[in-house]
Length: 287
Image: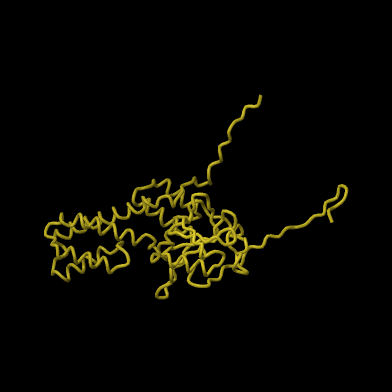
């Protein structure tokens, strides 16, 4: 029935938000993200097409941290995501072609999941916004962005300074996304610097490298290293050797972290606090 003369048959369209995602393995739902020709998640895993479990298994086997299911089943994988922005979950509502009852993104939309396993009963879940604010915080502290840019990004991502502090206090164990890369670079930088420490022996150097290798992260372990050096080599922590060590260790960590964040700074696309700029409209002369 399609109305009549000067009469509309009116219908109300009700949009149903998808139910909260229920994990089938250790994956975590990150949200619905935009994709483009230069893919957000670069690796297409054909063996994972159309099925959550098959996609997750293929990505895990390939050593990837994140997967995105798109357009009914395309399985894309990578180790970072989000450079084109996030959209409401309902934009990733296309049914999966091989997984009844589940949705697999949409046209140029990825249903993104993180695949980091849960270890030792620790809850590793954190949101896309929290991940981004962590990255931009370190970019600010490493003088890669201005304080104005940092504050703008805090506002754009929906945070206040108090809530940013809450993220760091409650989820400090989650600041591990780039730990492996940072640790490798810290070792490289410290290998170059340690000979400048007066009185620091090769045996001490190898012991420090051994300590770093036993830790999950090179961040925040300077005091641990100093304490172990004191115990093993019967040193006085107040001596000049530790003043030098502290300087060159801090320099190694700074350079390592800065190098990693320079490589990954495309993860953050700075926008004014009041939203993206208006698109430019070309002027057309009509004769």
